[in-house]
Length: 406
Image 1: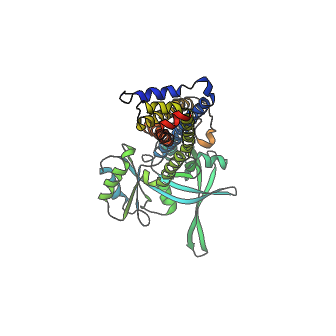
Image 2: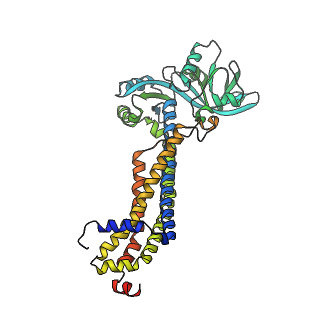
Image 3: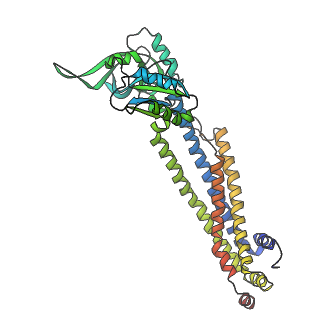
């Protein structure tokens, strides 16, 4: 028997087919399979949902903000025309335009809130959430000092087209009468919705010239924003542009501008992976306890096998194969159920989300084959490791003693 090939697998399969008198072992075996399946399924679903939210967030950020921003390291940008020409000559840049951006206060009828006051050109605005259309209305409006607001600002302050709002700078300016804030009354001519709550609650946009005049910047701007043909190549394009500009300029792409946000999301995914892996570890302990019970119940059979010539390594392989097969079966069951649940979440309204809070009406799901493969491999490896102690215990059994007393 020792020279027979594949007998370890054959015996392991026989041990998995528990007889009627060993119902408790059968129950423990199925609990082990179920534990592995639940852990794998939970990992796939949770990580896919988190990847879906991350992907949705990336699309909204790329759609609403410029891919590259060039600013002066100190103060406002004075040589905007030169920087603009350098950017337009950089390979990969699709468009570029100057912008003004300052933190200000907006007030109406005794209500005040902090905003990000922006001056943009129609050609430079991203075509997201009606922002470009809103800027077109700015250009065509006959109102004095026109402005468009994020949908959440307008909703919170009950603002409609034609309403007047006051924009003022907390910094202000020195006058003979003392330190006075700089302010101007603007007319609301429209609203926009980028799909990002943080933007729609803070952005107030006017034309570039209007912003420069209000802030008394002259020809200066806050910086130059550029869009590239492929947003994924923005870091490389930013590096090329940075080499062409002097050290007085700061060139940042959208991945750097939002690095803290995406870094936190990646860290959360890693933490969630390790937390949910504990479910599989618990199932692995169940596999180990199942094999220990099988070893105790098969002492006589193990003794007979060793007396017939089976080596200790062959006996060890039998129980390692048995435990690994439990892990593989549970992993396959978990992968199938996890992928199925992800497809169900992604294509149906099984979980409905309030769109006014999350800006999506159903759970975004993004299944990554590499992540699923990593989960499956990790599950099988943990299951294999859990078989080591029971298998070594079986391999160390003395055949003479087990046959004599069993």
